[in-house]
Length: 120
Image 1 (cartoon, rainbow, N blue to C red):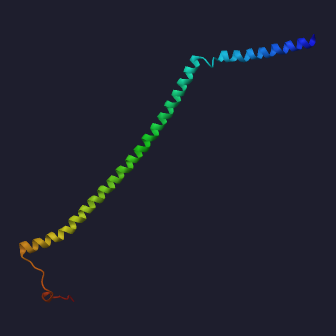
Image 2 (image 1 turned 60 degrees about the vertical axis):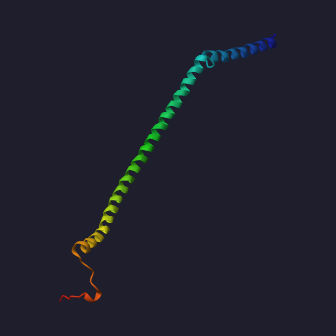
Image 3 (image 1 turned 180 degrees about the horizontal axis):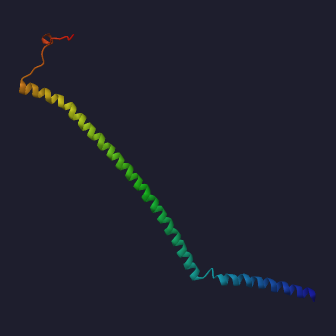
């Protein structure tokens, strides 16, 4: 009889354990529609947070790139202004020579007509 009592106690203990595990799952209510809805909402919240972080990073990256392009544009504008000044300087000599020939009837002397003056 003691062997049968021990066997019965084991069966009841294992059944109690199964009921205990089952009751924890029922108590936690992990597989209910409500819990599934909460998990979906948490997942959407996580995705939303990651997307906010990504868009903030992308915004800062593009703002930095915009600043670099603006700096480059300013440098190119300064360089363009310098080239325009240089071009006007080079064209100035030709303009002066043309005005001297046209308005003052000046000509370039021959080599034999040039006199070198020495200063001592």
